[in-house]
Structure formats: structure tokens, C-alpha cells
Length: 266
Image 1 (cartoon, rainbow, N blue to C red):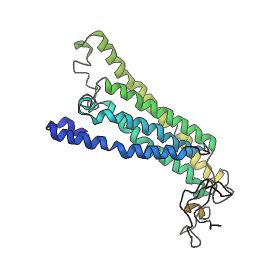
Image 2: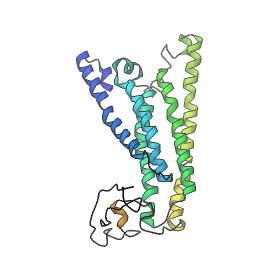
Image 3: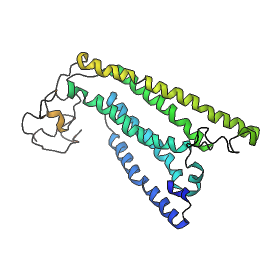
Image 4: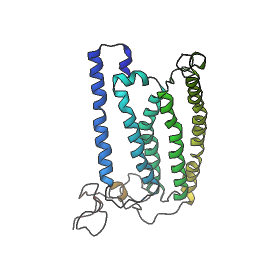
């Protein structure tokens, strides 16, 4: 969608618009598959799952706000504004930062033989989720008000956002929009602070965390949970045979709610 502003002809611009909108199709399919997979399940809302679930609404917001950027007429106004920054980070941040945190909390028991604190994990999750939204959600309003991402003053030197060259209403709105930078900065610092419980929890749990009672504390089905805890050099101490697919949960007729891949068929 960045190509719309290069002065290209309408034919090639229409091509880029079409390909930009087509990108949304696999994204919608992935999000739908994740939601359908959760439907009817008995979900345990522990810390890794909270970070994984938070991806769904955050990525949904990022995807929906990307649609206006796929049309020429709306992208002309929103291009190079703070709206693009907000959209991009709603798409990328949950899928990277939250995924990393979910993975650390999830595989930490396998790596160390101990669990991280669930209480401080939840403090870390809710703080990160709240402040991440407080950072990027106001940027949508800033972008729709015309605040540029490329200029130190947000483009306030132009008539549409300069109180000296506009009416009182526009000038007041501009002051409000520019003032959101203060709250965004405060939320960014708060986002940094709420990472401290994670750091302390990580290092404290290595020596003092609750010991896991089995090699598979999450009742997972995939092969990495067949290794000893913590895993030795080479991970597996014996040859592993795979009997089924990696997502055998609540299989009709099975005695248990989960069936590991390496469990022989009965």
C-alpha cells in the first residue's frame, strides 16, 4: 500500500490495491482456524494460554484496521501517519512479543524442571496487555487526525493542524491529538516497568520455582515432552516412535483427554 503515494498510473495502482487486499484472506483463515480450534474446548487459563489467547483480539484489531490502508482513496489520507504505526504494531507485536512470552512460560518447566510463578506471570500478562493497548490505540486517533509519522511535530506546521492557520475547533483538536504523545510515552515507560516481574520471576524460578511432578506437566501431546526434564545432551534418551498426529485432544472413545504422539495405540 506504500506504492499508492508514488504517483503511479491508475492501472498499476489498482493492481497493488488488489494484491494488498488479497493478503487479508490467509490472515482471516488463520484467525478463524484458531477460533474454531478453541470452540467447545476445556481451556485452562494459565499464563502461557493467556498470552496465546491475547494474540487473537490484538491481531484482529490489526487486521481490521489494515483494510482502510488497502484502498486508494483512504490510504491517501492515512499513509505515512500514526495510523500506520498503530496498525503495524497491532499486527506484529502480539505475534512476536506475546508469542515469545508464551513460549518462555510454556517451555520453562521442560528446560529447568521448575514452574515460573503463576501469580507474577498473570501480573506480567495483564500489565503488558493493558499498556500495549494504551501505547498504540491512541495512535489511530492521531493518524486519522492527520498526524504525520515522519515529522518531529507531527506535521503541525501545515494549515490543517496549525492553530494559527485554522479555526478554533481544529486548533483545539490538534492540541489534544499532539497531547496524546504524553500519555503514549507514559504508557511506554509503564510497559517497560511491568517487564520487571517477568525478569525477576524468570531468574528466581530457576532455583526456587515449584518443581514439576512429571516430564509432561501441561498434559501436552507433542514429542518434546517425551524427553527427560531437564533434557540431557541430545534431548531424547531412546528412539521415539510416533503413533499419531500432534493434536490428539479429546479423541472420541479415548480414556484420557490427551493422547501423546509416542503413546502406542491400544
